[in-house]
Length: 111
Image (cartoon, rainbow, N blue to C red; front, side):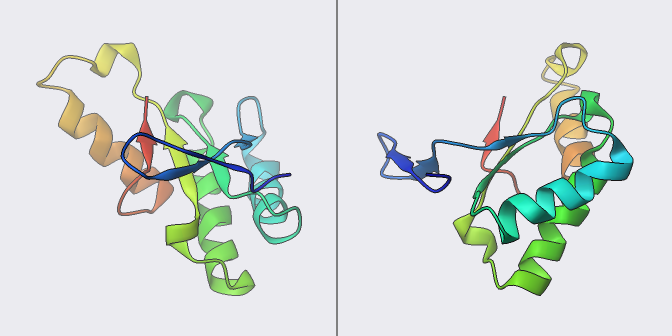
């Protein structure tokens, strides 16, 4: 069930179920993400800077890639820009901060 996908208009396949990390304690979310990806078969992770745990979410993603044989291209990572960063002059810096916190070179969906 965790890897059911929806084909988007451009042909991209997005996993329909994802692990949400809101209100996840930074001290616990690493294991939750790793377990979701390595053990439960999830391929979609939902994060946000405002959750204050994005670094640990990214650590869990990278651990799953490094230790569980999961390929980055098989994952869908979502993050969110906070409304104070919606201004075009602030957006590039906000995206850079998100990528740095996650330790990834891209996200698949940015809300």
